[in-house]
Figure 1 (tube, rainbow over the protein chains, first blue to last red):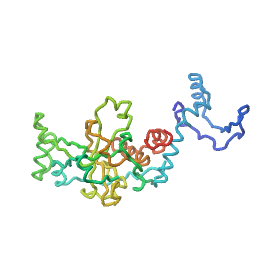
Figure 2: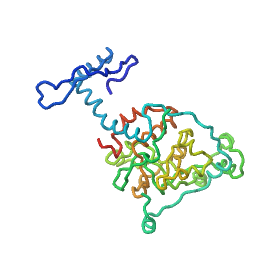
Figure 3: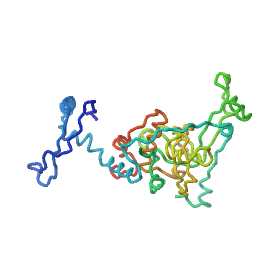
Figure 4: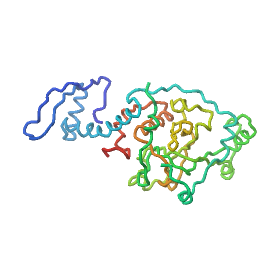
Length: 127
Length: 203
């Protein structure tokens, strides 16, 4: 994204500043939501608009909102699957030492040829 | 602390058919991996002796000597790269190299399943048994065995399983951790990557 976070970045406000339909747009359900920006970020937004002609709302639509449907789907799938998005996993590792038997086994072929044509006649698919 | 992986019952895509695009994390059968042994190391292994140091093993080897100790292995393999490297209609049309890694039954190793599932073995990716569903049949992907193969090996009819989006994000984190020892933010992966998954309803 063009608005790359800076070290002094502030989080967007969680409180909507207004909640009313956009004037002159019959049937629109748009709402406004305030965003708190550091002056450096504000300058980036304005420079981006100068370069592209995209106002801030359109920047948000194209750079952020466009990604959210897929992201929300994935995060919901992760949560349903027992994961906790945003939380760090355990990175403690066990010490694994290869023994002589494993080293020897590494030098033995173990490839198992598969003939799909023959298998199709004799074995039911696994899935 | 969060888990590295989704639960086993939520690990795989629900339905796969030959029309599904080949994707990162797909599991194929009958696709080989290769290990290029060194004659001196092989001799030491069969003599049950300590592996020679690179300095002790130093010699000029002709290609045929290397071929003689090239080991072909694998019953199942996983596709490793991000699909941007091989997707149909893009680079996949002209790039003929695919990278895969070998699956090994955890029960055939000295490693404990709980350590693989817990992400505690650096070179591994946990893969629950896609057919039996029994924990005793679980697999690990050994990332040390990554091998370049021809794209011609990846016939979709040989594909036995494909990862769901949660397992895909877990796989990307494991790959990043293996190569960089850095935990990549899974929320960032969801934001930047989820739309690429074949099952994404927003594609």
